[in-house]
Image 1 (cartoon, helix red, strand yellow):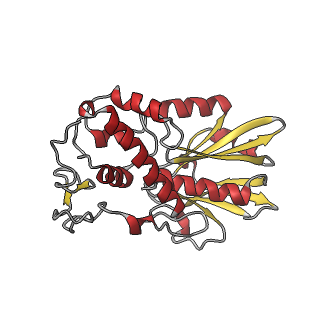
Image 2: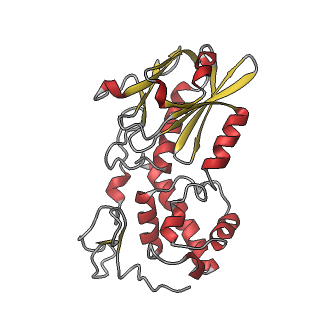
Image 3: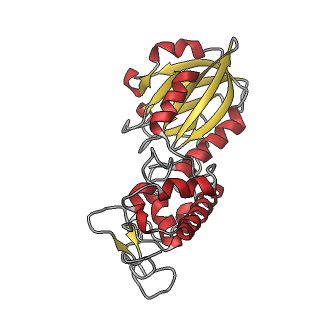
Length: 279
């Protein structure tokens, strides 16, 4: 599933190639791929793309026309991709929306989503505010350390679950939660209330380092992720624990990477991430 780094890579590529371009047409192949705002689709024809932003794991395209601004928000979901027309696409029947542009670096942006867990939303400014308020918590790359500490220290429950709770911290999923927790030396099941301020501050720094490094590598193409230009993210080559069950710990501590009991996608080193960590 694409997470924050992958969505950021998508936003940056679209911004580079399509910002300022005029949308000639929008083609919706199936109505149920649009979560809300389908009746407004015709408005976008002739509008100019003035912004491309990432919110959590979603990408928002901002269009302007006649001094009015509207948005197309794309949820990448588990298998959703935004692809340029120049990229060969397997199973083209899963291209559900096409955005056709005039005089741009790319003539077409396609929304490809075979499993359809993600959707598009066509929103005005107020609609976007409501969409963001109900879906996303703090952004790991823009939140200050002080505010991050405040959010973490004010919560209870398992740390990994908190990191992945999109309404609290937006954008982190299984891949990066595993990698962040291993690097910071915290067990996935540790109770948030047991963490000292110093531990949370270190968690903040490592979280940002991991996410920034992944973005620089184009994200992680573990299964289905491709950037709009068709390239694969190379951060998967730097994963230390995700998908590494039964392999020796990369810290050479003598431990072996295990999968957390009852969870298919939680990986940790029992020596580097002891369950009884304190402070």
